[in-house]
Image 1: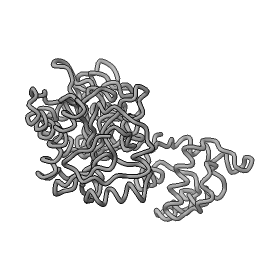
Image 2: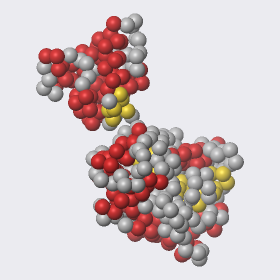
Image 3: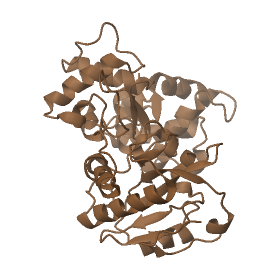
Image 4: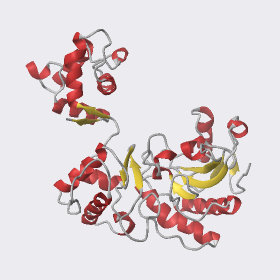
Length: 375
């Protein structure tokens, strides 16, 4: 196991001895979403979760190491579960509760020094990881394989610091050749043509090759706002070069430039385009209405659209209208009654409060409890 001489050793057990060995080929920087010292990070990994990182860096630049760099640390998810035995070194950093603040000067200096040691000790190449499984340096938000369902960690400010300050600082201190400034958060694109990489925002992918209803929603919003000139047809649910070029036009309209206007969404620009960050949890109004009309008269526990109904039921339970034991995917009589009570709380009456969801009430519930509603 390799231990960084610039860190305070706080060895986690039994993880340090029992978890599989890795050959480090990547370094991934994280934000812990809490203003913690390395000691507090160690205590959290030890007492409160089965996850852990290799390193923790406090606001004052203090560094703690919890697991040797040639042992798996689970904060990197799939980056440490590759069949060839390679893995990633994870570096957690203190941050505000929303991971929106910048790294302090002391943190930047600590990350640069640590990055130089990791390059020298393990041969980590002085570049941004071009793919999720390719050697180099990166930030946690870059690839969905590095997290459980995607993440926005670290925030936009730190992602920009990584590519504009931290990695160039590591390269300079290690005496390497300058790295090209990457396009956006994920890594370098080609020297010509639209950017061709993806990012994950709130659990959903955007950028070249992304697929899903969130892609269509972005394209339709771009067209509505006058940024659809590159579409020959569409938009549809596949992100192509035309989507990237249209999004780049939108970014320019916001005053972005350089790597911040490469046509791949960031959290800030996406929120400005759509007014919110789309959620991976989606509910079809038509499906929920069909369930509300079918399940109450069917056999006990019948599920017409169980997954979507369960999202609605959990939201009603979280709002205090349904007992948790009835969150079962069956939109039966109790759920209809609970939904009617929710409608009445919004000021509806009569047939407008009959327990059959309508678009406005369901969207209100979704806005409160973090799911999107489709027609």
